[in-house]
Image (cartoon, helix red, strand yellow):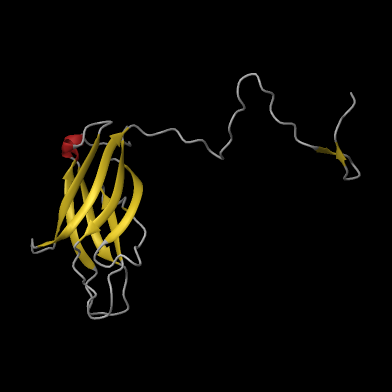
Amino acid sequence: MASRYELQVRVASARRLKNVNWRHGPNRPYAVVWVDPNNKCSTRVDEDGDTQANWDQTLIIPLPPEPLQDLTLFIDVVHAASEHEDTNPFIGSARLSLLDVGIGECATHAFTLKRSSGRPQGKVEVSATVREPAYRTQGGYCTPPYGVPPPQQPQTASNGEEVLFKLI
């Protein structure tokens, strides 16, 4: 059973990132966010960001059916795949307890990214909102305003010509 909530995460930027690819060129950072490890989302790769990444991207994460106070948002900043085997792509990670994010409220934080050893490796700016899922139409069909007839589709005659008027 799915949760009745989803998490809207806006990953804005990261500053003072460690260049894990220093031997071979600049960083190509992106962010990976998740609450459930089986359902991860990521931003696009900032090709020009190096140690100052700008994503300004909003991601929607469905939440598992557990109580919100038991859930944590995980954020990893990673260097995009490199052909060099001596490059460890992991830059740093941060966490946000969803207990600190109210339902329907936007919580903005600048998190210190940390390596596995606990050393700080820059900051990432993230906004998070727990919300009820928004209804999305399938196929993009919109109804016309009230009192306005729907547009008429041109009809074709049996000989392939368009018929503008059809006599009844």
